Image (cartoon, rainbow, N blue to C red; front, side):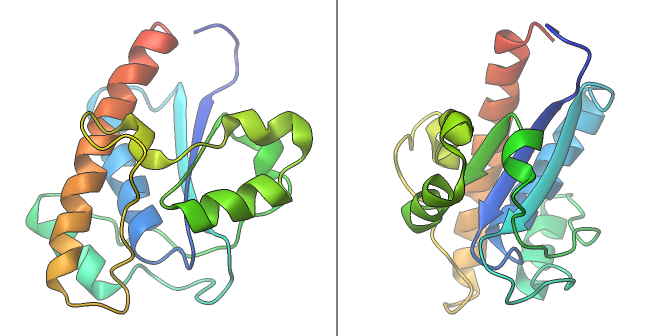
Length: 163
C-alpha cells in the first residue's frame, strides 16, 4: 500500500436500500474473507434521503442471504459532501446517480467517481438495474451483477494497491 490511510470504497444508488447496500455487504464480506479489513474500508450511500436510517430492502437481504452474504447490518444514508474527500473509490450503480455525483462533487474529486460495473469482467459501461419497483426476481440478477463486480473490484484493487 502506498500510504498509511485505508483504501475506502463507497457504493452509491438512489435510496441506499437495494443495490448499494448489497454491494457494501458483498464487498465487506470479501474484504474480511481476504484479511484486508485493516487496509480497505467499505460503505454505501444514496443520492437521496428517501430511506435514511432504514435497513436494506427485505428482498435484497433475502437474495444476499441465499448466497451466504448478510447485508442486514447496512443502514441507508445520504451522500455527504465530505464523502468526496474521504473515499478513494465512489461507485454509483447507474448513469443517473453517476451524473448526480459528478455535479455535486468538487472538481478535484470527480476522477474517483466511476460506474460500478466498470469493474465487472463482462459488463463494463453498463448499469445495475434498480429492482425496487420491480418483480422480486430482478433482485437475483442484481445480486449476480454485484457479486461479480465486487470480486473483480477486489482483484483490481489488490493489483493496483499491491495488496
